[in-house]
Length: 223
Image (tube, one colour):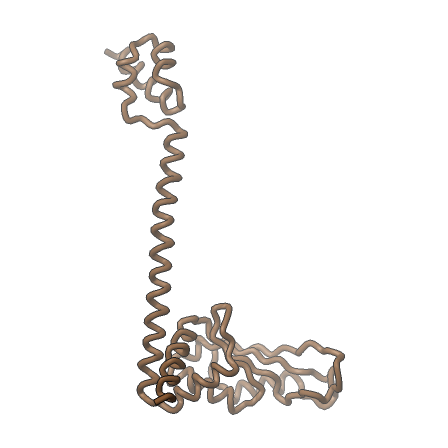
């Protein structure tokens, strides 16, 4: 009996390594029927690997489909929320949506607005805070400016940074960088005293909100 147990264990290990039932029978000098019974349900290493890959593909595909469904659900909800918000007739909401539609970035998964007009930037921040309920710690501000190497009358970086800090108040991050100098035309042309300011939020749902709102505002305008 002990010998048979030993042979059974050996047969199972050999089968896992991919040795055929016939070869196992010959090497262990036991009948093929015994080997078949002992190794029934035992997968070879290759079969185990293939089964694992198949399971990964199966569940990976399910995972991708679930992720896609969640994305589309969030997109549709944001679009619907935008439509409903537009129906409320809130002036700040309509201004913010129109500003974004005219000057905003609509790609790369970010919701961003860029302008040189300080009052426009402040209005857009109000729109983010009051209408889209974006908290200050989600807002990133980038300012690009022409430094004194471009024009001796331009402001220093620290002056510009202090200006925007005072105007915007709390934000997640404020970065001030010199703008690349080009040699096309007068240095005085298109010079902006406090730089070009970009305020952005990494939340693509906000874009779908505005898309929904714009569609609703179109319908309202046609009535």
